[in-house]
Each structure stands twice: as C-alpha cells, then as structure tokens.
Image (cartoon, helix red, strand yellow):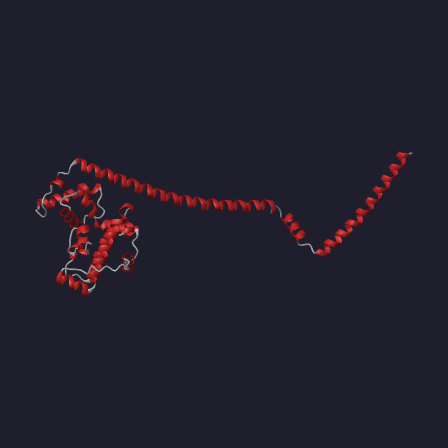
Length: 286
C-alpha cells in the first residue's frame, strides 16, 4: 500500500510538502492555509467534470492530509526532522467536512476571480515550471497539473517555457518543443468533446430552469383565468349577487310561510280542473 508521500509524488510530482504548497519551511500557519486553499480549488471534487471526480477526490484527500500534518506543530516537527509522515489514516476522517470547517463554501465567482489573478502571475509561472519538469515536457501532463490550462493557452505557455529554456532554467524536452502532430490533435479533439459536453450540460440546466419558470407562469395564469371565470358567472352585476345572497341566507321561518301561501293558491286550481273533466265526460256519454 502506497504511503501519503508516495501518493503526493504520484499526483503532484514531489515528495516535498513545502514544495507542493510552494512555501518556505518556516511559513506561518496562516500563510500555509492560503496555499492550501489555492491548491484545493484545483482539486476540489465538486469543481471537476464527473469523469475526473475519482482522481480529484484522491488528490484532494492527499492534499488535505498533508496540510493537516503541517498545520499541527507536533507532526510538522517530525516531518521537518525526519522527512516522514504518519500514514495511519483515520478511516473516519471526512476531509470534505474538514475543508468546509476551515474555509467558506467555494462559489463560481470565487473560481472566476482566482482565475483572473492567477493567469500571468508568478504563481502560474512556478506551476508551469514544476509541471514541465514533472512530466518531462509532456503537455498532456501539464494540462492536468497547471490550473485552468486549456488548449487555447498552449501558445502562451509554450512561450513561457521557451523563455525558461533560453535562460537555462529548465532543460529542453523534444516532446514539448517538437510534439508529434498526432498527439496534439488527439488532445485537442478530447478537449473539444469535453467542452461541448460541458456546454450541453449548462444549456440543459438553463432549459430546466426556464421550464420551471414557464410552468410557474402558466399556473399563475390559469389561476387568474379561473378567478375571472367565477367573477363572470357569479359577479356580473351587483343586484344578481345580492339576490343570490338573500336567497341563500333566507330564514327558515320565512320560507315556511311562503310555502303555505303557494299551496293555498294551487289547490283550488286542481279542483276546478277535476270538475271540468267530469263535465266533459258526462256530455260525451249523452
């Protein structure tokens, strides 16, 4: 089973924790915290495509554990003295929860603001140099290690690396300066597919939000139409609504009196009708 420093070398190209965080050995905890935050933005599982989540989670766990080691004076002293770390990993440790306790939730605006300050900065130059050396000039490796690097950034980054080569800061790797065309095309096609997928997902999310808004508007419109229909049927005139109300609210006693009056006027009419019928039958028999 690989140790924490082995995993650090695998994912970040170094076993030196201070080099990973790009800080001095005597760095105060507050500055270390800033460096950890900067790196964690690159590996946070919630900020990468679904296909990269598994590896990003492992990288995030390694990064968080190394920060935990340096932020504790006792474990930091052991590392400074012996160059080793405690690999007894606590299975109950939730590194995501720990991160959220240390920092506020990351927003899209945070990422965008950091991207603006990072591009062209000295920090980016150091990351480019480290990635160039770690991957021995492999641009695919650099794409994974340099934050926000895309195919569109290749000409700009190639210029930065060439300056380093000219100044003899780094050796020249032919795989970088004379990269095979087929390899570059495969990378660009992969990037184009990922960019298209990301655009489709964003469009789908926006469509879903728009649909929900349309449904809400339609529901409101249907409710308004129902109210208008009821008003047209039962509230067309004030007099009709008053009559309806008086009929519904009429006292039972008043209704009983009206019923008796109605019966007294209808009974005689029935008797006359019966007598007239009897007379017709008698005349017809004669």
